[in-house]
Image (cartoon, rainbow, N blue to C red; front, top):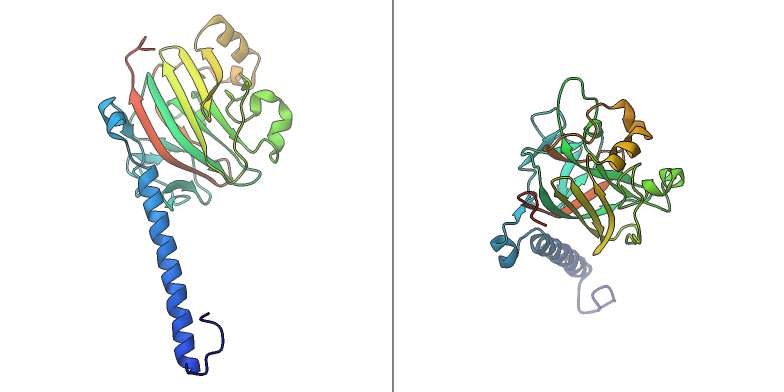
Length: 254
C-alpha cells in the first residue's frame, strides 16, 4: 500500500505518491460525474424524432431567467450536471411559454425540503408570485417537512392544495425521482416514478369548486391561463433538477 512504510522510499517520495494518488482519485471522480451528467441531460434518437427538446443542457442556465427578472439569479447554479437552488433567489422560469405540452424531469430534494414545478405562469405588476396563476406539481420531503401534516394534497406529486396524489411513492431523500406533467388543453396528469398519481380537468366545474374552497380563491387569475412559463420554485431549500425535457402538443393529441 502507498501509505505503508517502505524502507526503499524516502519520506518525500512517499508523500508525492500519496498526493498523486489523491489527485488521480479526484480527477477520476470528476470525470465520472461529468460523464453521468452528459448521459442524463441528453435526448435519445427516438425522443428527438418524436419532437422532444431539452430545457436544460446540463452545463448552463440558457433558456431560463428569474421570475420578473432578465437574468438567472445567483441562487441558482449548475452543480454536477443539475440545475440547483443553492442560495436565496427567486423562482426560475423558462424564457419561452407553453400551452399544451408533455414535460419530463428528474428532481432531488435535500432533507426536509420543499419545492414545486408550476405551469401556465404569467407575469404582471399585480401578480405577486408564480403561483398567482400557475398550478403546482408539489415536490416535498413527505417525512421531514411540516407541510405534509397539512393534508394529503400537500404530498409529493400532488396538485398542491387541490388534488392529493394516489399511489405515489417518492424515492428516499437524496435519490432522484422521475416526474412528468402532461397538459393537453384542460386535461392535466401528474406522474411520479412511472405511476400516474393525479388527473384533473382545468376550468371544469370540479376545478372551480376546488379553487373556490382553497387559498387560491383570493387569486383571480389562478389556473385560468391557457399558456405561460414553466417555473421551478425557490422555497428556501436545496432542490436539483436534471433531464428536463419537453414536447409541445397540439390540443386533443392524447
